[in-house]
Amino acid sequence: MRATDTLSEIEALTANLVGLSLSNEQNFPSTHGDPKSNFEITVKNASALTVALRNVSYRDIYSTLSDANCFNMKLLDGALVCLRYRFEAGKLVEHNLGYFPSPDLEQFQNEPEIYLSDDIYADIVAHNIVPFPIRFDFNADEARYIDVDHPYSHLTLGQYENCRIPVCSPVSPLIFGSFILRNFYNTAFRKFSDDIPAPKFRFAQTISPNEQKIPHVVLAAP
Image 1 (cartoon, rainbow, N blue to C red):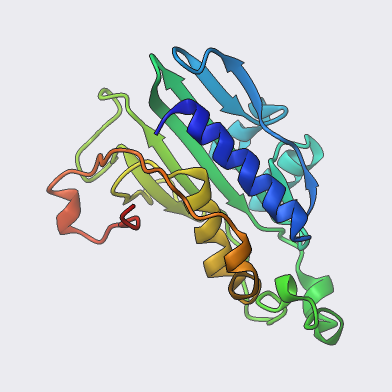
Image 2: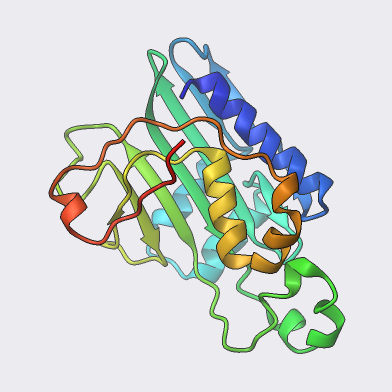
């Protein structure tokens, strides 16, 4: 999957979520460099993304990203979607894909009858929902890779430092968007799935044989 394909998918995902009224604030991606050599696809004020790796409360992480306008999309319930990809010599070397739900869902949960009629809120009005961040990270640096313990591509749930669930390959923007909508906004996903573009591209597999022996994430085949 080329850098230009990746950029096109981010733009398509953003445009479609805006068009379907699932996002009410958005920043189209910023780019740096040459897509055929060294190229970065990032978000506004991307330096704020480092807060997600710090030992601070989730509320502080969310507030920092929101206040810095550091997101591709802010969904109607306040959740932030952040996507960053970096290529060297035309090949993907790193990505950070984050979903940061709003820590304040009480306004929706305390008056569910108001929001149940809107598809995007239908899955978040229950009082037993606990918002937590999700990250899909990839880094091709062999010096950082540790078989099983630190996979090239992995999924982190919450802010657990050592939660690195192996993923079979890097994750494309449309696959990431589909994952978020299908699992956390399923009512809206089922209603609008035909209007959301299907992913056409995949990155090459990076998972090791040992990582395939433990619970891991397998992305759909092309």
